[in-house]
Image (cartoon, rainbow, N blue to C red; front, side, top):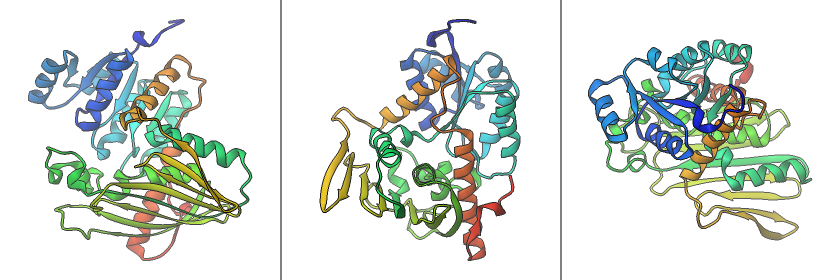
Length: 340
């Protein structure tokens, strides 16, 4: 149909947990037709009554009525759903990470490219105004070579979703794709985006806190880049206070980003300057709303480049898989050792 507008599109949201509900509400705000797939009868009826939306119990049936699919289910179910949607030629927005393992990812990638599908990975931090500015800085300014870097994120898992039992969440269960390594893969994606391709990984994974989890709550990684930089990434589900930030050390400058304050600074020639600061109106949901709006723009104009492509998602997942393999072996793992 020529000259379609946003309201012409129907988007199916798979899953109605915390992230699924966020996407549902944002899509409604953005003006598309929204439907939901949920495979539990009692929960589906409750959702249908509360939101006045069409809720499907059959994923195959739901796909027939959708132009695009948002996959926001447990990580270990992502790939199967994405493959079905891709085979039917649907545009796909898939929450990070793409899957809990790289096995089977090549089939999805081949389908996406063969059918020229619009595909976005939900790494919403790429939509953060501080990080957009940071990317512009490091691609346009000349700070000399990158020497080292550090990325950190952490917060006790029991404080993530107030009012819910963290022990029952997929985040606390390795078999469902939970754990610090995959659930906090944003930082891996950011480092791969901002510092260039990673060639090898050395990592330690552990469950060290007093929380009742069936997955690691702490990950420490050392990454080596193709450009010679060496950096660290720390992911945790145990910090008593929320923390998230980046530090990039170049020959001539050090760039710092603090998510909590929303401030990006540059230390150069002995002068620390604020390069970017979020507005008072900024809130976390702005990232999700911005990325979803970008995805919808790509439905109208598929020539727009992805904010986070399937290749980006695969790269982050491959690095994560190397980290787990490194922890198991007790040695450094090259990315070339992971065969998709």
